[in-house]
Length: 113
Length: 116
Image (cartoon, rainbow over all chains, first blue to last red; front, side, top):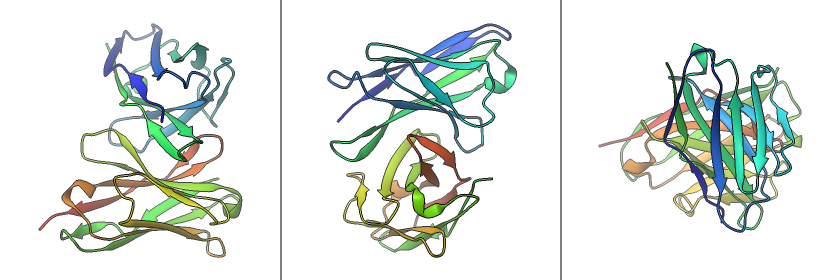
């Protein structure tokens, strides 16, 4: 089944942009993933569904500052004009139709400086 | 709007059982696959199980297979997770999640603590 690899941490200055990466394992580069944000002490929140083509669909109320893109096995979440409330853990996940299992990446902790 | 409300968590001894519930509202429950996802203290997210929209199929993570059973009652807009033979490593916040191409709505979670 697929493995999703994320950097454990990232940082960005207030008002800057940051690009988080989720990498799919070999043989799974065409998989669709979901991006989720978890602010401290809160439940996860759906951000978007992202396809290998780079096409994405955001959840209700997700600010325009959040966007997605893809390149090969890499799936990106870009946050523009980073705000203090963007400090959170970001997880990617995918559904494996072969095993009928869901796989999560290890998550990236974003610190806003 | 979509609401998912989990209940049934608590403190339980190792080897005992617990049943979680997820009450759904604001959407046509019977049209969606539903999942349980858990998060151990200070750890990442771990998928637990899924039930098909009509309850016809269910799948489990290897770590819970044979001990947990997911089910749903579409007439009550409610999903369940029967957890048997609980272990310390099952201690986590358990989230109910709707699936529509991705996990598009999350509940607030219910805490399960397995401890003697």
